[in-house]
Image 1 (cartoon, helix red, strand yellow):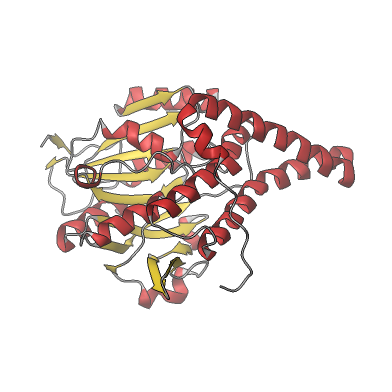
Image 2 (cartoon, rainbow, N blue to C red):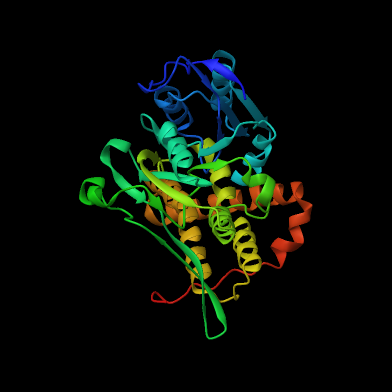
Length: 362
């Protein structure tokens, strides 16, 4: 295992750290859904990561200003930058990075996540002290200082009743303020941690291999946590490590094609079909249908943003119509281009039905 002096581009230093420390962790940054917050997210890693680490950044066809910024930072800071000239699904990006990982742990983090002081130290400490194979932080939305929780772990498991399997997922403390539940936030086993930020023992990929490449827009976090727990490997929440996902809107015009592909109907149907088949879930599973509805709504945030811009010029009716035409044309174009690149998925996509939206109560 390599050793280095404690110098991470000016990052915070924990008092317990020695001057010369083994590098046990590789941080892998992968694209999630946008490029708008690339700079603040990356600079939060530089500023708040005191634990010595390797950094691998995967960039999938980001706009020119972002590409140039990342090249400059990689040259100045000395991290590994992997650039693809086409859009990447998050799992595709993570797979590209794994060949550069030779450390005990790998921490995957999305490119739109802000971290806070000591985040990586605390994730690794939790894994060391508990033997966990996967550790997730307290996930927040918006600015970390606000403390608006996205999830503090959660439940994710298969139910069986009357010979029928069904999937159950529930986040813990969604949209609650940290100040309201502080006394209930403690390190504990959990059923679910997400790839927004997830520390894994690198040995995980020797035992389970890479996640199924058909997980394009969703399902990979659920699948991996199910596999780990089925095999008896602990999954933990470490709430003293805090990160915050920066969700759109707003959007960048140059980032819309990636966003529309990332949440495209094709990617959503392929991903949900993959999860359903791998875990033997029925075609009319309630969770599958409900999540398909969420994914569809999330994609439509882009249409709403474009419509808002166009209505200022064209008025309400014409602006809405123009926005729908523009977004749908762009949606079709990026999906066609992606499926040309992935011919092995064309037939799978063609025969992957759209799950039916369920009634509000399961």
